[in-house]
Image 1: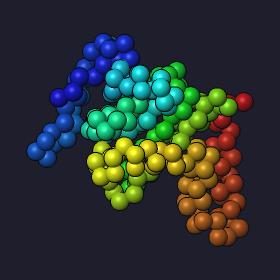
Image 2: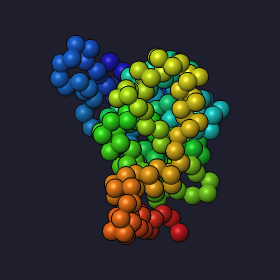
Image 3: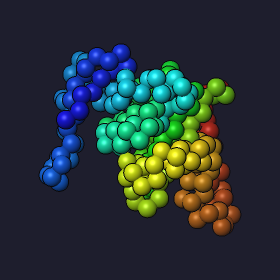
Image 4: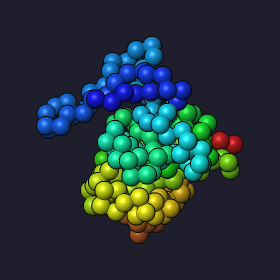
Length: 201
């Protein structure tokens, strides 16, 4: 059982994770006037000093990923508690640091979550803000990777995370057969322009 606190340390609710494989795997406090999972970030209070020092927020999906990375010394980590990253989440993160890095499992679900996060980031993009994406290979969660590689190895992965523009281009290219035909390239251009129009003027 984990306490979920806001950036000022005030307790908002609780999150639980089963250890015996039973369902539901995760269970949060019910939504209330003080707790909204779509606006709350697990670990934000504990991460504040590390965020200030590194000038970045590392975003993961689950409690255990956040706890594991923090225990390994990557203290700027917060978690969206299994829900998609929302505009409310981003408003809180960009108020704390100029760089936000998303770290997801490299499987299909992780790629889908990363792509949804990219689309949520577009209206927040500016010259003063950086959004990057780290997709982990080997079907492993961030807490498993940091156990194997330690903070040094994981920090090297963070340093190599793709900028928003590079992730956008690579993902759309992969969705369009790596641009092998004129039709693929035309669809790529159409999809890219639709996303670009969501950037702030």
